[in-house]
Each structure stands twice: as structure tokens, then as C-alpha cells.
Amino acid sequence: MSKQISLFLPARLAAILALSSLVVGISDGAHAPQRSRALKREVATNASRNAAIVATTSAVLKETSEIRELAILRPVRSGAESRADIERMLVRNLDKQRTPAEMHATELSLRKFGLAPSEFKYRPFIIKLLTEQVAGYYDTKEQRFRLADWLDLEGQKPVMAHELTHALQDQHFNLKRFEKWPRGDSDAEIAAHALIEGDATLAMTMYMLKYPMVALAFTKSLAAGGISTEQYDLAPRAIRESLIFPYLNGSQWATQVYKRGGWAAVSKAYTNLPLSTEQIIHSEKYFSYERPIKVALPDVTNLLSAGTGVSNQQSAISKQPSPISNSPFPGTAGVPPAPRTRSSKSGAIASRPLPPPRKLPTAHRPLPNDAWHRIESDVNGEWSYYLILDQFLNSPSESKRAAAGWGGDRYELYEGPGGQVFLAQLTAWDTDDDASEFFDAYVKRTKLRYAQASPVELASADKDLRREWRTDEGGVVIEIRGSRVLIIEGIPDGLNADAAMKALWS
Image 1 (cartoon, one colour):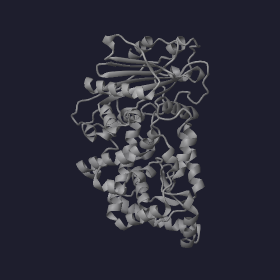
Image 2 (tube, helix red, strand yellow; image 1 turned 120 degrees about the vertical axis):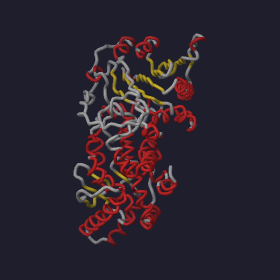
Image 3 (cartoon, helix red, strand yellow; image 1 turned 135 degrees about the vertical axis):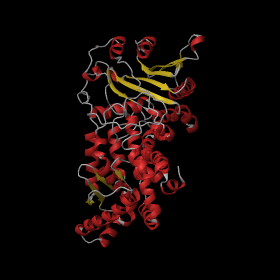
Image 4 (tube, one colour; image 1 turned 180 degrees about the vertical axis):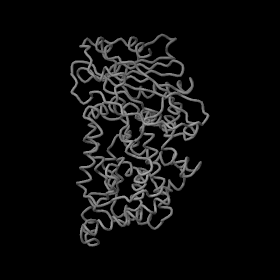
């Protein structure tokens, strides 16, 4: 991270910026009445408040356009919005983006990976988290910028610069195309989101560098109003760090792209999207356009049902070749990547047209509770594997090193009778050594994840290639073959572990 970004984008502020793909927030409910009274003294009527916002928006848009080197193709409408209206918008958008079944799958994924406690409820928590800090947003549908009506305009100009960069992005690159990302590759989705937010964060940083008095007013605004982070502080670590990833890691990546070719290179990235969080973390892999390896897993619904003696009648979602759902690691923007095959590092980059959105399976329908169902199929990526490992290893350097050789992956989540959950993960690594390092780290993580686990004795010849445990959440097996590692967790009673591994390796 450059010194400039470190100076003007401390982690706490970035956390506020990262609360939503639409919202950049700096506020504290406890101080709202005081700010409201001060605002009433400054602005007599809503009409004059809106007029001030319109004038300030026009000025900041012009300044941001010059910094970002994107021409203003049309004026950006703007106005004030109440806290209640912004909160209703957040809830409405969340419910549009995620069906109840997808929310449920995300909740189970977080729990099964050990990233959230067993009692964690995803939807109510996310709503509280997103509404804790609200300031303003750019609406791609209405092409309109809205600022919270309780905030001081001068102190929020950097926030406006960030959001108005989104308006310029929308005018030039059509951000609406990022809102219909096909389910099933959240890692690529997060990478595209990092491009959008990293671009806007870099522009905001340059805005504050160019206008230091505005940056000072922004700092004073934060100091005067305080920053409420109660819900953010309560959030599981994986959610906290994934929300901030597009802003912090995205701005680091955007800085590297900018250094190679200025804003023109950043703009070109909207045609040649980053394909993975690996490319965001290691910008050199974006410049060489190292493509992720496509990994597939077979559907083992029938095997689970037969092994546990329940009906093997499959729901519509289980019959899909790859049921598409959401990763537990948030990401909300992007366009689908090209076919995922690892290419040579020639640096050749081709534009990839946007295919039609994939139709969702019937995940929104209630599923029978007496059978197994595949409820999620997704890609974790390097960033999420770092989080999965470090949740228990608590050693960022070790976890980052173990995740750094990532080449591709797929995980699938199944839900069975009585709340049983079965998780299968197949990972591909750049080299056999990378796979071995991940294998060792995941074994260590598993021993910490299931503290009361009982190891299963294996033949001496298998001990270096396979580890197996019995836990109160079902059996766990980790096996390495060359540059690939297969992991299954939650093996139910009655299902033979060898049969499950054989089916999944196939």
C-alpha cells in the first residue's frame, strides 16, 4: 500500500466505506440530534438544503472528473434523503439481491467453515450492519446521487468524490451490467467489486491530496460526530475483512495498475476484468492474466441419501449441474469471466462479452426436510482461503503463505435431515509443493476447528497423503493427490468416507 493511501485511508475509515456496495457511511446515531440542530441553524429549509447539495454535487463532480480523467457525459441528479429512507433502500436492495434460500445457504456456509457461531443469523445481522453507518449512495437505476440529510456538506466532500466516481464509472462503463452476476463464482465477483471500489477509493484519495483543506474538514467531521462501529465490531471476522477487501486491497491493486499506465490503464480494466482475488492480491498475476483453474465437483446427493437411509428424491436445485448460490464472503459487482483455464503468462488480454445471466434454480422454494439437498456451489478463492485458515491459525503470515499458491477451487454445501450439513471442497494449486503447504495448514486448522476431534488411524503409507477425524459434526477427511487437495467435512453416520472420497475425486 502506498504511503498516500495509508495516510488517507486508515483501516477504520475503510471499514465504514465498506459497509455496502452502495453506501459510504460516516455517522453516529448518538450524535445525530446535535448535528441535526446545527444543520437547522445552517440550512433553513429542505429546499435550500437540496439546492446546496445540487450545487456541491456539481462542483465535486467537476473536480472528480478532472482527477479521474473521465469526462462528464451528463449531469448527475442529486438530493437529500432521510435516515429512514436510506435504511429502507438498504433493506429493499438486500432482499432483491438475495432470496431467503440464498440467505440460509450463506448462513450455513459461514457456520460450517467455522467462520460464525452456531447461533449466527445472517439476514438480521447484515441489516443491522448495513444500516449502522449510512451517509449517501449513487443509484445506478436512477443515475442519481443521494446524501443523508443530517450531514454537513463540506465535511462530506471526500465521500461525495468517492460516490461521484461511481457515477462517472457508470456513465463510461455501465455499472448496471455488474448487478446481474451469475451465481457460482463469488471470487471473481469480489475481484470485479475490488476494481470498482478500488478505483473510487484511489480517486477519493487523490481528491483529498489535491484539496487538503477538504480532507481536514472531513477529519474534523469524523472527530465531531464520532464513528459508531458497534455492529461492525460484533461482526464475524470473515464478514468484517471481506467487506473491507474491495476498498483496501482494491485500492492497492488500482494503485499498481495506475502506476503502469495511469487512469487509462484503470479504465481498460473494465474491459479486461480481474478474474480472481488472487489477481487483486498479486497484481503481477493480473498483468500476466493468469487465469484460475476451472474445478468441478460431482453431485453426491444420491450418495448422501443412500448412505443415510433417507429418500433419494432430489429437488430441482440438486438436479442442477452446478447450483448457483452466494459465497459467505460478500461481493456485489462484476461481469462473468472468460472460460477458466490457466493460460501462459504472455500477457495477452482479450475483451470478454457479457453472456446472458444464468437462470437461478428453484432455490427460493421450500425444500423437503426429509432428504439431502445441494444448496450451494461456489468458489472461495485465495482471499477466502486465507480467512478460513487464519480464523483458527491466527497467524496471518502463515495463512497468507498457505493460500498464496491457489490455482482454483470449488466447494459445495449439502443440507440433510435434522439439520445435518455436508461440505465438500476440491482445490487446485499451482504446484505440488503449494498443495502440500495448504494440506499441512488445513490439517492444522482442522485440529483447532474441531478441538474434541478423534483421529482415525490410517495405514502408515497413507499418513502423509490423508488425514481423517471423527467429530461431533460428522467425519472429516483431507486428502492430497499431486497438486490437488480434497476436503470433506460433516460426513454423516452411515456414509462410508472412502465411498464419498472416491465419488468426489471422480
